[in-house]
Length: 447
Image 1 (cartoon, rainbow, N blue to C red):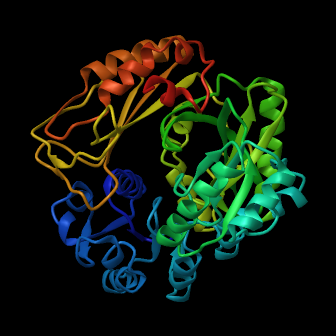
Image 2: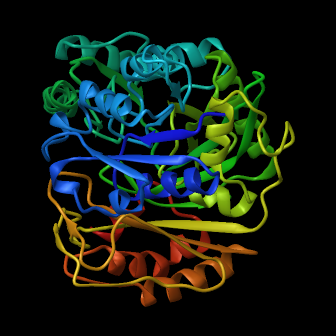
């Protein structure tokens, strides 16, 4: 086992990783931009190094600056968190070339899943269900219309590279496709450096369900249960729960087996997530969306129902050591819900940076708060405005919903606008309360 870990990230995920690193008796090294010099993750780490200006491209996304911090600190391993360089195969290779341990899957696995079209084709070849769509990149609008006519509408237009819902649009006909195509392509170039577009049949009234997998050091790939991520705004998740209210035991077994096949197909090692769309009109049908070759934002709810520390498991696999559970993961117990607390307008979901004047976290049985901020800290406009993740566990879903209402009501944040009022709306929504919601829920709440 290595003795020190550099966390190449910031905010709540850096705080969360640092806590596990230190609990395991390892030295935790933080990096920070000029804007984050006084940030919580910097204060918590055993050592912290500055890596550049506020702009991510000149700090957290600058591979040479991050590697410089690795050399200066003498860190023996690098944990990328999520976002920034977490799914950058070139960064993973550079870490390995520097003689450090990369806490993540092999660069080849990252590359295999990094392009949505290549990933779809690989999954289809491995027997994982995929929605009807294109097997090649589309970069011309007339070509896109011809492909869409063959696949059928409604159609999802999405950037072939990258993730996070960026560059996605749903179209109902050829004119809608023509209107959306150039915008999607422009955003794909801006955010991911590639104009390639994927066309895929859109599944209306779908659940977005992901399966947590772990590839062990000995090559075995296991599934650790599913999470429902259907509460989304602008195709970006805002609340997640486990188990999914739309998944029965038969579907769970099928999806878990498909997720394991997906991991095996790319020789996956470490923690990852295989994402699916479940057709609520026919819950026997599910389709591969993408694979996230990193730790997910919503991993705490899997930890709450399994009792595992997924960051610890990542570190053990990276070190070539057995998982804490051997080859028999614990069965999930109870139910858990995560709500992402953002510094944003709760009506329009626009970022709302500012200094936090008051911060009081809820506590009590079944309550977990993973926060990157606290009273006196400033949410800057340079980064994602996620401040904390409010997670709730209970023996059953009804208890979780009751505890969640109490926890949201007890969470006090003054300063930046935040989306806690939205979660009160969500918890009061009859469809969400019944578990019959789908990916269109937030749109209906805001219509």
